Image (cartoon, rainbow, N blue to C red; front, top):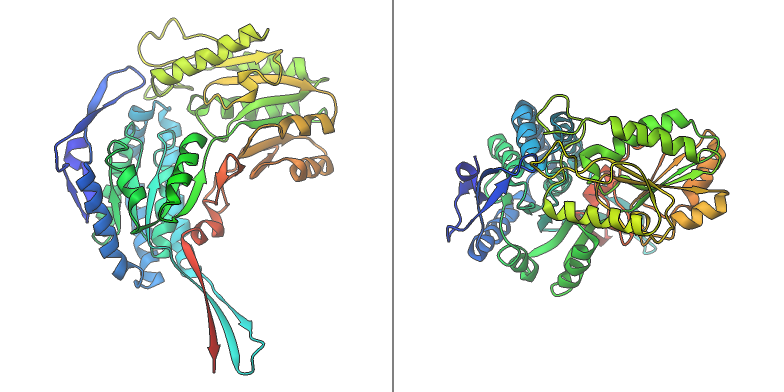
Length: 478
C-alpha cells in the first residue's frame, strides 16, 4: 500500500529521490504493516517549488470553482470510508467505529470549507476624505506547510488542508511518520477529485529532510502545527527566521468540574467513554476530574466500575472498546505517571498496569486514581493516556483557581444543572473551549483551539479560513 502511493508532489505519486524508507507498525500487535518511502531534502525542495508555482493560478481560481472541487473531494472520501477507517485502525490502534467517525469528521471539514470559500467577505469603511472609500479585502497567505500528529490522522489534516485550499493557498503536508497510510488515502482522494498539480503536496520523512527545509524557506509563508507544546515552541522560534504566520494547536491538560448539583449518572456516562476514547491519547480529553466533596466517592466508584468493564483489544475486533497506545514510548510514559501516583500516596481504583491477557501490542488498562496532591504528575501534567485522576473540592472559588493553575488552556468541562453557575464557570475558566454537560467541542462549523501554552489560532468555523488569509486595506478615491 505504502510503496504504491509514496510521496505526492506536483500532482503525482512518486518514490523518494534517494530511496530511503521507514517501517510502519500496528500498535495492536507490534507487527510491521509495511515500508513507507521517506522524503529527502531534495524531495522537500521539489514540493516547495511545486506549491509556489501552483499558487499563481490557484489563488486566482474563482471561489466557486474551489468550492466545487472541495465538494468533489468530500464525495470521493465518502466512497472510500471503509478503506480509510481500516487503515486508520491498523496504524493508530483506535477501534474501527471510532476511525469511521473520524473520517466522516474529516469529510465535514471539506464540506464546510467548500461553502466558506464562497463567503470570504471584506467590508467597506466610510472614508474621512471627500470622495474616498476604504476597502478591506482578504487574500491567501500563500504557500502553507501543515504538520500533524498521529492521534487523529484524518481530521487533523483536513482541518488544515480544507481551509487552506478554500482560501486560495497551496499546501504541503507532513504527517506523523507513524500514520502515513491515512494521509496517503486522503491525498489520493484529492488526486481523484482533480486537484491541480502542485496545489496539495504530501511529504513523509525525517525532520532533517522535511521540517528543516520548510522552516528555512522564505517561500513558505505560514506553518500550522498540531503537536506537543515543546515542538510548537521550537516551531515558533524557527518561524521567526523568515517571519512566517503560525497556527498552533498544542497540548492540553483539561479539567472537568463536577458541581454538587450535577447529574451524576449523565456525567459518568459521558465522561468515561470520552476519557478512554483513543486510549486517552486526545489533547482535549479530561485529565483532571474535580468533583464536589459530596459526590466524590460515588463519582470515583462509578468511574472505576465503568473503566474496569471496558473491553480492550485490537481495533478491528468488533467488541473492542479501547485499543492500544501508539508505541512503547507511550507505555513507558504512562507507567512513570502511575509510579509517581503510587509514590505520592494515590489510590488506584482501576487499572494501573498492562493487561496480562494482552501480551502483544502496546496495551495499558483504563486507570482511575484518587487521593493525589495537585502537583502529582497525573494532575499537573498532560498524561496523554488512559489515566483519570479524580480529586475533590469544596467551593467554586477553590476549584476555579485549581483548574486555572495549569500552563495549558485548551479545553475544560463543567457539569451542573444550574445555568447561572455554569455560565459563571465558563467565564472564569482559562481555556479556549469549555463544554457544559457535554464534550462535543470538535465540529467543522465551530472554532477549535486553545490559549496559554496550548497554542494560538483557530481551526474550524468562519475563524478557520481567516487564519489562511492576509488582510489588505485600500484607500479608494472616486
